[in-house]
Amino acid sequence: MKKLKIVLLAIVLLPLLSNAQEESVELFSVPLSNPGNSGKLIVQQLSGSIDVIAYEGNEVIVKASFGNKKEHYKDKSEKPGLKKIENSSLKISAEEKNNVVQIINEQWNKATNLEIKVPGNFSLKLGTVNKGNITVKGVKGELEISNVNGEITLTDVSGSASADTVNGDIKVNFLSVTDGASMAFSSMNGDLEVTFPKSVKGNLKLKSEQGDIFTDFEMAVDKQKPVVDKNSSGGSYKVKIEQWVNGKINGGGPEMLFKTFNGDIIIRSK
Figure (cartoon, rainbow, N blue to C red):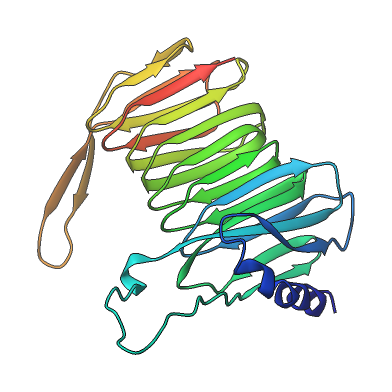
């Protein structure tokens, strides 16, 4: 019944969207099965930004604004004798079960910029591909964040994080981290800048092909040895050599991987 209520609210708002292409419109609120307990938000979309912020409440509140259509969907040619009517169609819904909320965005031809409020104790699984950045603020939980053509910014978060993008910077500021949690941060074209509490423990594995590595931690760097991967299958013999920087902070702990091709790695303490 909750799912039906959410879909109907989205449909009622359709007339507003054609006049508010750049303004945020509240689509719906999702009540939780177990208010006050931890939860999880899942959002995977094709185009547009995702902004998530923690607040003192027991529902997930979803707003949206809409950018330009994706370029390869545009038909720039004129249609003689016809006039264009703006298409304000909308197909966004949500499902909730046992405090797991999934936002289902079936907008394939428009960039949908989602603004979502969640209770503070919420894990996240967020992903977008084109025309958008992902930002998260004030959330405590397991964060799994993926982008392709955009940046990832996690501010004042607690818990653990795995963040990857292809074209964009990754910037993370932790208030606290989960003991024993492994983490990974990677970008093809972008800087990785992560700030940890001074007391964090970790075994760091770092690699930048075209950039530098900086830190203000007292890091015990292992003697560098190239990793040799030998493979002799299918009648052929292959050898692959990779050079990583390995080091420990505060005596070592769970693995923390940092990898970028064209960018710097910056690890700060606070």
